[in-house]
View (cartoon, rainbow, N blue to C red):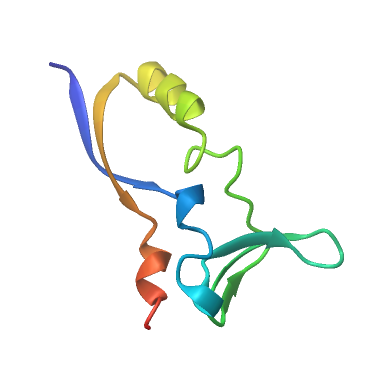
Length: 84
């Protein structure tokens, strides 16, 4: 077996809106600037769509390019900001 990456993060679209008002939410503001929101915490500009966080084929291409055979993925650490 080749390289194993034991620290990678993922953002799952299926998780959006699962904590009610707390989100998480990925959207655009009125000016078209993308943002990622967890409760009152907003990261702007931030667009995870199309990034390695959400695009599995892109992640796999980058893993192949970098010689990584396996990744251990966990949710984006910002999701720990949700306190219900």
